[in-house]
Length: 466
Image (cartoon, rainbow, N blue to C red; front, side, top):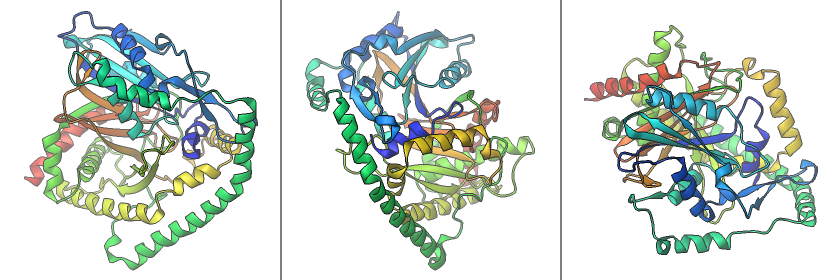
């Protein structure tokens, strides 16, 4: 396991759950009797295509180096799939309540790090399939690959001939369980190379700081960029507890594209500005809007070589949400400029700095510091690094099916971290853009009220740009 992947294990505490979730809402009208049993059958049939679903952790000796993955030859999917009936009235709010409870429980590290919850008996012949996978096993790209392995393009599924190539590729990647000697060699190698990794981190960090400072000082076009540790404190920022609240909302893809085109920006500019508008209106109604803009950290994929064994290849950029700007069009322009500066900073920092820092981090020390940080509630004491984690993932633009049922909507959920206390993950699917919102239940108990502001923010921005 790479250091970047392992860091999600080290940073996990009783309050910080380092798993990601994906909710798929399906229409079962054409599949009478559809239930969790259909998902069990599908996952068992395609288990060999889902590598993270048939691997478990094996620790290095005395946790002196990063863990390794080992294949589990006899995974029983039924032990990982659970079902629950959606409470009345069976709508998306009721679904979100069930998913919040599911998200509040950490995964068992003694077995493959995934679970699936099937929420049956929703209103209008709908159901929901919720995957929970540890972040050490997948990033956004990995989650998309898992989805592509289990969805179909028709309710009839795929033939064995269509799956043959994928099965052969998966079998070629299987590895035997490491022996005691293998683990010992792995640990010793990690200890021996750690000074070298630490030296590389030092060089990379100097280059990153020099590059960012150099462009901020020498480039007049870097005004409006956001910086970490300069964010105002919002009500949902600070130390967190284990409980989670969840909300879902979606908007029309064509509306987001219209907003994007208004200033010649990107899809991410539009999503960021919409999020800024929703948070501004939410905080204004509670008389809690800070004078300066909220700052978001946006994960950026740095994956290049598809043969890279690392499950996570990401960097991050800090950007303004423009919550201090009342005019929607001006907010969009502010966000567009801030994102442009943030991309330049991220490129100057280098795509491999996060990976190198993670590779050099000593496991025991990192995990102990993470627990101490959470236990002593340090996030309440120091300046706010950033207010929210905002991710944007491209989903399939075409209709997909899951275990024969038509997928109506996709809503991802990321981990909630100490400090921001709020994570918003966005995915486009067909002609809709879904927002999955998850927060610490103590910090943001009325997350549904925040979700309701997103359609209003879209309408407000559409009227302004037109």
